[in-house]
Length: 319
Length: 319
Image 1: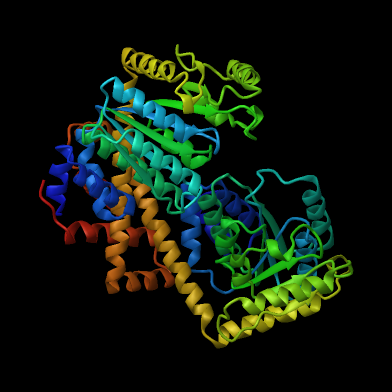
Image 2: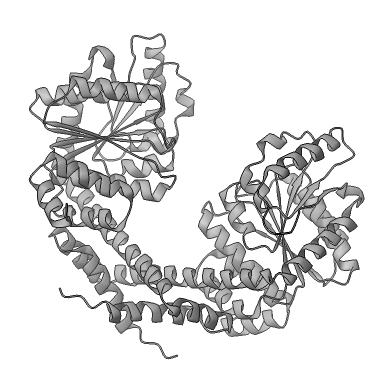
């Protein structure tokens, strides 16, 4: 499939094209990056919901339940599962996934895992590209699930409009272990497995911590108890998502986010130019000559400039 | 002090200029980066020795003892202590440092810590700049000490010609905990605190592990027992450094390293151009206009190219 056919197919919502496009983006190569950048202008219509939390709190089950609920409300749903910590998904996760495929096996849902390539920046960019693609393909709601609270997860959550942080009672993820960074990015907090002992304690501790977090705007993050495996509380979660989305629209915050994403695309493109200049220069004797000039004491910044100028002249492009 | 005076002062080995220059480089700003790149052509004469190992194995004491030994052998010694893991050095480290200053308080030794800025790439680049500066200032041997075995330390050790890995018996840094990456970069292994119980066991385990590591060339890394606080074994360590340096010279490997460092300088300069283009573009309405074009669906790579072309035209430079 060539790039143009793929591009057209994705915009038409063709599932095979969506799958192929996500593979390109997941590879992390030039063709995936170009595709994501081209699709960007067609994105910006979807609701992008981030779901994060420690392993074992039941995020996959929750995402499953949310997808079913959203489908009942006539939403189309794209799901991205991103796990920066492990290159391979374990058996439990795989099991969850199979269950999800069974329960929501219709054309209105698309589910995909993003591989971890051991490169935080790369994974974050791939996640942004994949969100852009599902958005451009017409999925109305995109659920982005990440594991844990590391740098990569927080970075990926920046692409979401509504961030949900999931906890569970007594699961090693003591309230104390929650990093301040995660509290600050959460718009909706969920205490899942709320039939377990200690759920009310978890809610109280969380409320206490949130009261210490500086408020951002007028939105005050709700704390919702769920039992995702029995679909208890899921309606309230989806209602909260909708309320938060209304809040964002009313305060013009969705436009701000979209502007920042376009800036992100531009920054990525500037870095792509740098990489391309380096790659093309390395192919020629120019690279070796330049390195030798530097060894001889020439100003490297001057020679870096030359490589950029050389690239501009060597690759004329129309507009 | 202006940049030219500083530059001249460093090349003349003036200690005040050296101190100021290292501060510029440690700041991580443009003036420090420019200084390091200008000095690069004057570097390449020093022996650069990396010393790494877990906290508590006695690296500082060892560096202290090495510095004294090297001074006796008429070497001038520059010492860089780099700790990526903690932004502030603790009391113990500070105590060691004071001891070091007392024992080797002469003009032939210069000691400096590099601050951790929580940014691996930045610290690694600062370390490379600081090594370059001390080298250009005429220090014959540069000891670069890093803590631990993370990504940053391994990256910094790439700038060293001879890498020494320091262990101690039973210090929580079980042999098993040593990462393969560290074993592979070590040219000389030191079991310090060798009067302690378990020292021979540590040596044996280490020998076993090294026999499993693929050999690189004809150099077979020695394992040396030391008691750095009583200067036991230090002569053998310095002899090993000199043997490894002879090995590098005989196999023309020092030139290879120097070439790779010049490549590193060029790569850094290319990335500096990218940063400069982004920074200058952000100052103008050009940035906002470009972002809005991207929101309107224009190809971001085309606009990235325009920003580079614009920068080249706006900042003409002679050669």
